[in-house]
Length: 232
Image 1 (cartoon, helix red, strand yellow):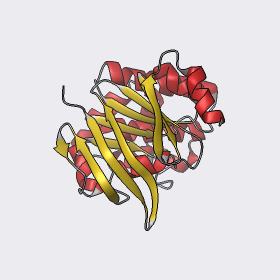
Image 2 (cartoon, rainbow, N blue to C red; image 1 turned 60 degrees about the vertical axis):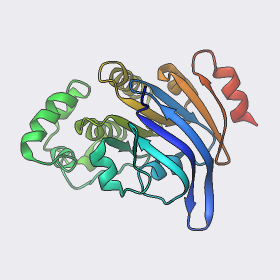
Image 3 (spheres, one colour; image 1 turned 90 degrees about the vertical axis):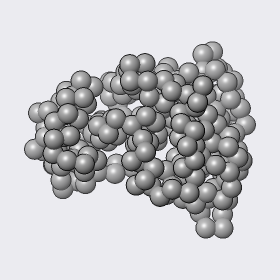
């Protein structure tokens, strides 16, 4: 089976500083892979490297068997990878509708996208004219997720979506990600520090430590093993 996303020997970083070293990972269609690790271990760098925001110093990245290693971020996005960054990367002075529209090629697609994302985030239909900056922190995270889902990507990269959120919002987002995996068949690469949230929905895990993968395996029953890695 062709993997939705495949990294082979990927190394990356900032200028002369190498942050990631020889990362080899795969994510299958309809699978959630949780990448776990403490702060400063390279988790966010991994997603930025996949998206082309940071230079790849070695190795390769493939989307459904197609090499995307040297492609620029807009081309990677158009090919079918959506990115939910850790930062609240919204245009705060634009409305909810305008933030969604920026991810889409035309007005007609906005209505189709709204029908799609409103199943997961029904409150958005009532907030289309509201400025994004006036939404609560949890609502802004849900808008970020909705924007990524609106483009119907085959691979979803999600960076620390649960950070700073109340439990009810985390539960909602967990349900949305699980639904996207099972019903839409999306491959999801989930970066997380919230171990309980990640393992609740992930099929497999990988632990990133100082820029290297130090452990991988099935998510079921792995909480104690991963907690040990994160405590040392």
